[in-house]
Length: 501
Image 1 (spheres, one colour):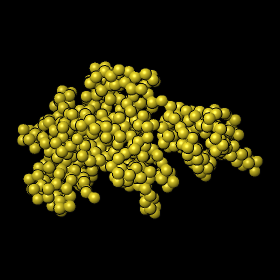
Image 2: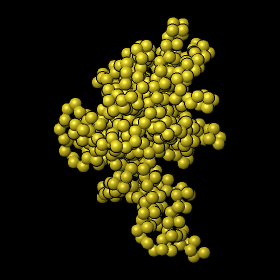
Image 3: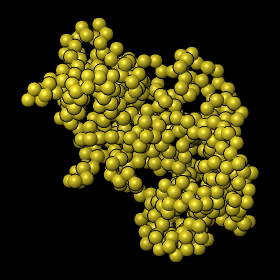
């Protein structure tokens, strides 16, 4: 195991925040260098890969504009995010200089920074949306990557922010430029972006300064964090970084993964959303590498379920499930996928998974491919057809539905629906209530077989499972009847029995 150690993951000592305002004060640059120097001296013999800062965008934008993250400031959203980020960049550069000057020759390690970025795809082929894409990329990734790889902030930021954006001295620029031995990247999702209406009359604000609307495609699957699953965006981001920055040490993907909802250990073992997500993202990572992108490492976030900041233990990113009461570890389906990949250095992706991971224009409904518009990043694509389902897959899917619908908690909720229906006699309310209870189960199972975890996907799979060719198979017919029994007759009978008593 080769460790890659992060010095700072949003954990500023409270005493420095109290004493001088933390990242808003220039003193933090010198203090961070002292901290880094101490770590290099104590652990440098064991560590060959260092990360100075993890996701400084989150610390700056969410800590000093929206106030979602520590230190929770939003008093000066038009200046403080830029000042905090400026000091983070300088602190990073000073730590790198310290390592290179005093430790690298003996310890022979590499040091860099990790930046987080969602891909931004123009909503339409218009020039305005292409410009919005550029601003979106500049304001999140370029904000930190441009000084480190090019020596200064993006021109789009300087033009819009003017004096609110700090400047580097010639001496600082010399230290900052080239201060990362590799391009560390955390990536999870993507957005369609479009030009926002003029906000010149509103208060200065880091997010308003961009004048960008971010849009989620309603067809995209989502993780338990509510983040969109968009594998093709990963490929486009990797390709863009390679072409824009050509990082000498290549790209190391330091985070990529998926939070999945799991109520039981059985859910974790069998859940397919995590492994399907990884299959799609890894396939598109390979596609970018095959086209020439210099990628030298990849980390899944995360090995174990862990403490997910403000969400606590409620969001499970791990490929290994942790029972937080007993500390029992259970490998998930995604762990089996990564194990096989490590052992064989090859990845098998079902055609239906790969088809749904490919690019398609925003909320596209047409089945015919549209012509590409060239370098603007907006290209047409055929919408994936309704997935094909073999009889063996049908039996597997129906068996899983039966197992989940037999669960005591599920049945209790269903019985309550029918009890309420007996009181109010409202068929529409009953329909909505039953759908709300079934949909979380359906959303976990359907993507395993290539279907959307939506009402549309449910309709597609229902029509597929009840075709004459499927129903002529006795086992499939019996499983279909069992699903109906578990979601209708059984809870309805239990509700009636309770009312009689």
